[in-house]
Image (cartoon, rainbow, N blue to C red):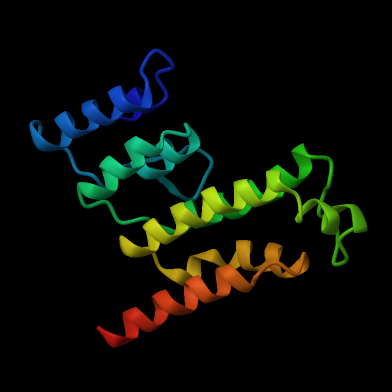
Length: 163
């Protein structure tokens, strides 16, 4: 299944169909993971689908019962840092540049953030621990853009406590 996710000859929709087949018909585990050499982590199907930018596959894996882990939350936080860097507004040190503050007001950033936050909301709804977003919280706090994430994580934490 892991190889299918990164197969460039398969669309996201085709990949999702194969994932459904592997899990439903062949009995594979939606929480399957593999050990990565030289790392202290196991990469899950969800992380592979996220890295391959296959949202339909992510949805299929979640629907089949996968529980997102802290590594995926960390990857999302790193993606914000990479997005800033790719747009020539690196986040260095404890005081972001005026250029970075200006950038977070652009439509490009707002669309990127909206896409990531939709995913975060979905992951939280499928059991991801809100505490896993510490890197993203720190990044967004440095650029004074943490309010929406804080509210999202607080709401999810309150739901967990109520259960």
